Image 1: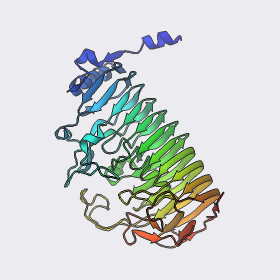
Image 2: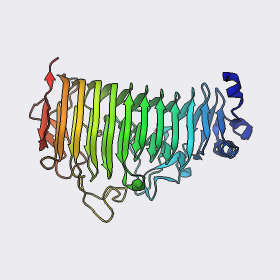
Image 3: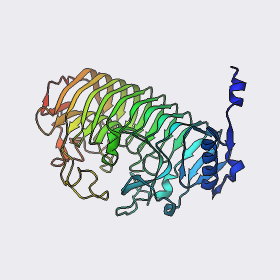
Image 4: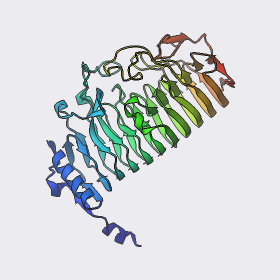
Length: 428
């Protein structure tokens, strides 16, 4: 069928026709919601954001069978009024942000185009500091909106557009299945704390490729949060052909993991100016197994202690989570408990990894054998000092007993591991 005929069959719902103004000032959320609802009710189609306009909006619920299409230079921007964000991104746990663009238990959603989704992150921050933005004081309610919170979505595509300046997590996939994220620029402000790029939470069959991600917190993070335990394990994940910069960990598994994470492949990526490269940070009772990192080039540097990590190129750990009563009301621990435990990390493979960094690699766990069958193949490290921050420790936060441990000047350091081959070639 000719492309013109195929396009003609797609029903287009221009948000201007539903009352959107697009002047960069008026809140267009109600008009956008009308367009989304009408499109889904009609059996599906394209919700169209016309080129060259900025649409400010509060929360919008996305529906089944729609394509959210932002044309050239079209911008969808979060309303900076903190008082309009009331739906928690984590159910009854209101301590870790609210939802802006969200969906629950839908199918066939595509978010794409050549425009921009802008989280307006700086407007939700406190004063700018040398190494970060100050976080506004909160108790058990944090009004900062996550950009995309997608819960139980089947057949999801996010393609080609720019997503930028999230105030909290940016793309959060919870219990999603059959996901493609391809060709996006995810450009968070490097000074915004908690500004994760893509969080894959209790999700499966996820493919991320050809993306450029800058993020103050982790660029790509796999996890199983306790709030969404009903969605089960996180597995069958691939990440390929991506470039990343982070002031925390570029690619991380954990720290939240109350279930299992397995069958993960990270390949053909470049990581620059990050505080940590490849990390497995198991701090809960869940397990991590069958993970492959391959063909990755990294240059890492130290940042201040505001950001977790000490420029470790490779970091594979399983330690019990630190005790405490945080703003999220102990959602970090099993219900009714105030102390956690950590699960096994096993069969982790690193192949053709080339890193320039101020620090060495660390692999370890709280008890002997908790971390096992970790293998390095052609892992090369060049140690280069580029900052004045201390580089004589590894960072185990959030850990119950040891926040930092001395590196002893080693290029690779292991503790309590079993059946591991951790040879690193240095000064290549």
